[in-house]
Length: 131
Image (cartoon, rainbow, N blue to C red):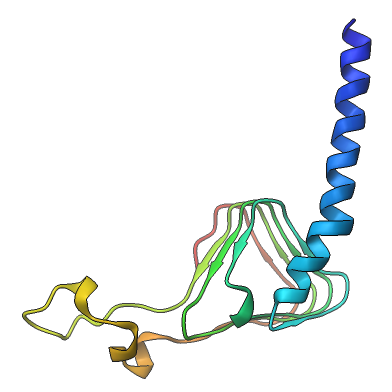
């Protein structure tokens, strides 16, 4: 019985990985602002697709989060991200006295509150990194 369960698990795992690789990942790459060749986006990754540019040979680990509002995330060629990497652009205005932070809208941000994240080529960003 154990052998049958192991075989069933392996078959389901192969089908799941194939479905993600050949069906889901092409959609994710197509939604990016720009995407190079041989780009891998790990399962469970949450990206702000319209503001992200990826070069060639980029690998993003599982459960990564790349979040940007007005700024962009630009990644060069030959960059690897480990799992659970967070890259978040933008900040909050701290100079508005007398108002709560959540009442200051995105349109009220200053240019220095949102800066692009640029990662040149040939880098390795390890697991659980926060940028």
